[in-house]
Amino acid sequence: MAPVLQTAPRIALVGNPNCGKTALFNALTGSRQKVANYAGVTVERKEGSFTTPEGRRIQVLDLPGTYSLRARSPDEEVTRDVVLGRFKGEAEPDLLVCVADATNLRLVLRLVLELKQVGRPLLLALNMFDIARHRGIEIDIGRLSAELGVPVVPTVAVRKAGTADLLKHIDTAAVDLATGAAGANTWHEPSAEEVRATHREADRIIKLAVRPPTKPDTWTTWLDTVLLNPVAGLLILLTVLFFMFQAVFTWAQPAMDGIKAGFDALAAWINGAMPDGILRSLITDGVIAGVGSIVVFLPQIVILFTFIILLEDFGYMPRAAFLMDKIMGGAGLHGRAFIPLLSSFACAIPGIMATRVIDNRRDRLATIMVAPLMTCSARIPVYTLIISAFVPDRTVGGVFSLQGLVMFGLYAAGILSALLVAFVMRRLVWRGTVEPFLMELPAYKVPDVKNLVMGVWTRAKAFLQRAGTTILSIMILIWFLSSFPGAPAGATDPAIDYSIAGMVGHWLQPLVAPIGFNWQITVALIPGMAAREVAVAALGTVYAVGGGEENVTALMDTLGHSWSLATALSLLAWYVFAPQCASTLGVVRRETNSLKWPLIMFGYMLTLAYLASFATYHIAASLGWA
Image (spheres, rainbow, N blue to C red):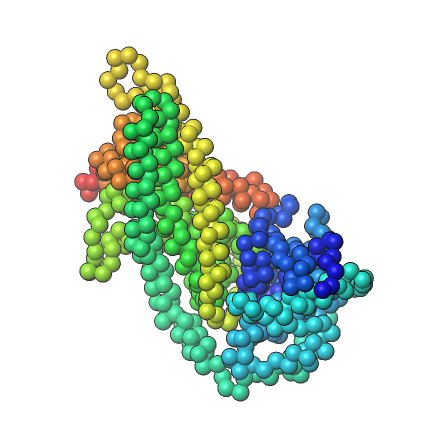
């Protein structure tokens, strides 16, 4: 066995977008990885570690996808600077592993030719090699390695032994790293003629080392014929989205009932085990009523992220973006805006960060400004609470859930409002033509179960951490403000009316009375600025302290008797538009490097929310629903 190096070598995974790089990173590191941001920027940084067959511990960095070191977006700039050793606070990688989609080598070979100029040790990992072979693509590994002058290793990241050869090559490279020196860095910003020369060289190597399939890939061709059809493809996309939103509302119900029963049992046990007093009120009315009313929606969050990750892994997302290009262009958005906007269904923060794939600043800003209008997962608890309280649980046409249809309508309202706002902004603020949409369509792949589980678990864990930290602390604060000072002797009104929260709510209530909100809603909206879903927990705490029950079912019943239908519809309209998320505004501040744009976002969304709620409430009132 070769001696183990004292210092863990650092390797960096580089590659085009959608090449399976993250799947390879997950296969190498498993759960030994951490995600953060690079210092000074909001580009995601993923680092992990693994041990080779020879017992060497390796640090691995998953760099953002790039087509070239010329860098045309913030993501690509980070990749370029890390590879070249220019990024402040980031150690220079000892070894570069360029990950390629074996079914489409032309673009990545241009990147390999650039990486060779950096002078660092380099490996080329042909990922999805099994898919290429299944399609009839023949790759002469030896010839490809000889022409490029770098080792070439086939990999299948989704198989258990699919990285064995790569690990052996990394072991060999680690020995060379301990004895050899890095070459000279000759990379520079290429001229137009040098770019064309690189393209010609990549084409030459492709002709020598890659033989295309003798039979066309009829399966991929047939799928693209259907999924990219302007009519059938759009109908399929709408069906997929509709099915996803129906699933979010219906499939999650059994698990939600189980979680709710667990919190109810915990509250009942505490009520029976502890004497009445401030401490019991804090635990039951503050912690359980607050955090419990948020955690109960975890199954819906899991289902939503499962759908999104499956669509990404299958290779459907870029095709959906291509399909939506004309609709996006009609609203003044770039075709690439579809993926950030679809990501915003989960959370506006990664959706805004995903706009870095859009090169043009005006197109990027337009997408950033409308991303929060997409219905993020934080709205789900609010929507679910109100829909369950006011919309009957019955089917339409014997198939579709009426509550699910209402939920789909709210999602559709968010999408349409985002497109309309983008249209107005591009006509009034950023005039000019939208750049043409060019995107490399990845190969279709069977989604990897391990990647799916890790992706869903990461997001579920983040949701639970948020519930256990930010939301918990806010709920304790709300409980305190709702409980103190107590009611004076001989008081006949509920004790909460005399509390700090009650006084603040009554003071602000005239501002929201025209849109049908009562003072309890006002109290809930204030902490809801920290995170949208906090409003549900705040309502649970306010009504529990005010004499209601802490479980979600009882809260729904309380709201159903306390609010009119017009008020409920007005609050739904408010949440379609309102900027109820301070974290989103903070990310916009960092992404745009300006305070102006988050202020504009806050102003226009708050105005739209108030106007929409005002119109909804008064129309509903005119129909007798007040």
